[in-house]
Image (tube, rainbow, N blue to C red):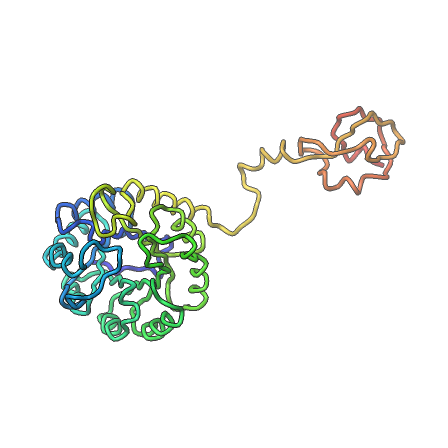
Length: 337
C-alpha cells in the first residue's frame, strides 16, 4: 500500500471519516467505502478500538454520548480482521484506506495491514509517550488538535517534528457540533507560521460544508469530514456527519476552489471582448468645431472602450480640436492638435 503523501500532494486531501457510524456492521462499512469513492474522496478512514487498551471501564463521558463509550465500543468496534477486509476492499476500488489507532497496541496491529499512515484523534494529542512510539513505527502521521492550547500543540509538535516520517496537524474544535464562533479558522494561518515542519489541515465537526470551503481557501492541505450513509439512522457521530451526496458537493467545491486559487492578476482571453464594450473611452458630448478648446462641456467618457482610454481625459482637456467632430463620436488621436 502506498504511503499517504500529504507533503508533496498538490491538491487538498479529502478524508471521509467513517468513525463508528457503521455501528459494527461490515456491510455498512463496505458501502461507506463504495460511496466515498463515488463521491470523489481521496481517503476513507475508520477507527481501531481496543477498549481495554484505551480507557478504564468506568471512564466518565461527556453529554454527547447516550451510553458509556466503553460499552458502545465493546459492542460495535471493528475487529482487526474487519479492518483487513476493509483495507483490501479499498485497494480493489481505488480509494485509500486509513485508520485511527486509539492506543499504541492498536497501531501495532494496524501495521499488519501496512497502513499508509496513522490519523491520530484529538484525545491523544497530548499523549506524547504513545505518540512517540507510534512515530517510531515509521509511518506518516496526521494529528488533530481539538481541546488543546497552542502551548500543548507546541509540546507535541516539538516531540514529533524530527521523529515522525512526516507530520500533519489538523485545526479542530472537539464540539459535536461546534458553534461557529468557536471554530476560529484563522488559526490555520497561525499554525502554518508556527509549525513549519508540519502540513496544516482542518478537521471539521460542523453539520454543513461552509467552514471546510473557507479552510481550503485559507490554505488547508487536508480536510477531514465525518460521513454517514443516512442521517436519519443512529450513529455516535450522526449529529456532525454529512451524507455522501454532501460529500460529493464538498469534494466538487474543494476542487473548484483549488482551480480558483491562483495569485496572478491579468486580462484573460475571455475578458478581452467584454473589455472592448465594457470599458469607457473619451467621446464628444456636443458638436465640436475645428479650433474649439476641449473641456468637460464638450467631452466626457462613454462606452465602448475601443477609443482613447477614459483615464486620459485630463491629458486632453485644454487642448485644441484639429477637426470638426459630431456629438457622440469617439475621439481619435488625429482629432487633437
